[in-house]
Image (cartoon, rainbow over all chains, first blue to last red; front, side, top):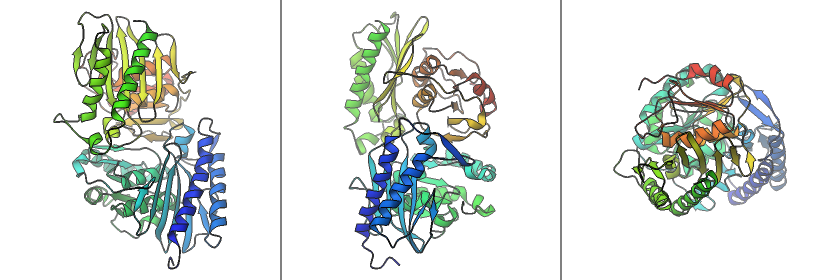
Length: 271
Length: 251
C-alpha cells in the first residue's frame, strides 16, 4: 500500500499540519476555553476542534486521496490513512500544563509509515519516517541504553476504562519496585516521543486510541526501541490501544510485569 | 535583609543555577555521583547557590551541603538547588530550584523556579504568592471526582479523581497547587525533607491552599533530618475528602 508514496513529501506535509494545529493550541494556552466531558476522564474543548480542522485542511489539500481520521470528528479508516490527535493532553492544556502535543500518523496496512508529534508549548517537533530514523528538530534520536534498575518509565492510569483499574494497580506497584521511578505526564504522544529521545526508558498504557499512538510508536521504532501490545505482539497494539514500548531491556522487563494483564481480561479498542 | 531583598537574592541564585546547568547537556547532565540519588548537576547548582549566599550573614540548610553560614543568624535559607534532578538529567521539563527563608516566626519569603521554563513563583509572608505579576489563587475544587491530582509513590487508596499525574518534583507540584493548576498533591510516603517542600508549601498557604503532614506533624521545621508526608489541596474540603488516599507514615 505504501509503494510509490513519497514519504519525505508526506512527512513535510504532516509537519506543516501539526504546526498549524499547534499554533492554535499555543495561542489559547494562557486563556483556555471551557471544556466538556466526552467520557469519564476524557475532555474536549473548542481548541481540540479548531486544531483538528486546521490539521485536516492542510492534509486534505496536500494529499487529497488519503483519508483523514481525527479523534474529534472521526472520518474514514482506510488501509492507507492519516490518524490525527489534534490536542493530546487536553486536561493538561485546560490546567495550564505545557505537556501537550499534536500527533499525526500515516498508517499503511496497520503499520505507521510517517509520524509527527509536535509539542507547541515546548518548541519541539518529533518526526519519523519508516526506514528513515527518528528526529527531534532535525537531531537524530535513539532510545536509551539504561538498565531496568535505572529506568524511569511513563505510564497512564486507564481512566477511560475504570473497570481495568483493579488489574492495573498491582502492575503499577510492581513497576514502581522494578524501576527507579515512574511518571505520568498526561500526553501519550509525548510519552512515546520521550522514549524515542531517551528521556524515558519505557512506557506502558492501556486502552488508548490509535490517534494517540500511531505517530509516537513509529518514533520509538525508528529510534531503536521495541513496540508491542501487552502480550508482546508487535502487530496488535494499534487496534487494541494496549501498548508497551521501551529500549529492548526495559521493554522486556515491562512485559514481565504486565503479562498476563488486563489484556488477558479483554480490553477492547476504545470507541 | 528585607523580604524583597531576599527575593532579589533568590532570583540571582536561580538565574545563576540555570546559567550553569543549561549548557550541561547529554552525558554531563546525566552524570551521577557516588552518593545514591545524587547527580553531578546537584553539586554544580549547590556551589552556585553557596557562592551567592556567602558573606550575606544568612545561615543555609541545603540538601547537598547541609548547614553552613553563621550558627546564630536570624534567618536560615532552606535550599534545594535542583528538585526533580531525575527529570533534569533526562531533559524532562519539570525541575526546579526551591528556596525559602525562615526566621523565628516561620517561613518569611520563598521562590520556586521551574528551571526548564524559567517560570518563577514567589511568596512573602502575609503578602500573597505571585507569578509574573499575577497573584496566585489555589483552586476551589472540593469534590474528589472533580480533582486533578498529582502524587508521588502509590497512594494508599486510588480515589475516583478526575485525572492524576506523577511529575517527579514535589516543589513544583506544590507550586502548581498554589497556582490552581493542580487541585491537590499527595505524597504516598514520608519522604520529603524541608528543602523539598518549604518553598512550595509557603506558596500554597499564601495562595489559600491547605498543606499538611499526613500525620499532622509540624512542617515548618529547619532540620535536615526531618521527613514529612506532604498532602496539599486547594480547599480544606478537598484535603479532608482525600484523606483515605494517604497512608499515614509511622517514621
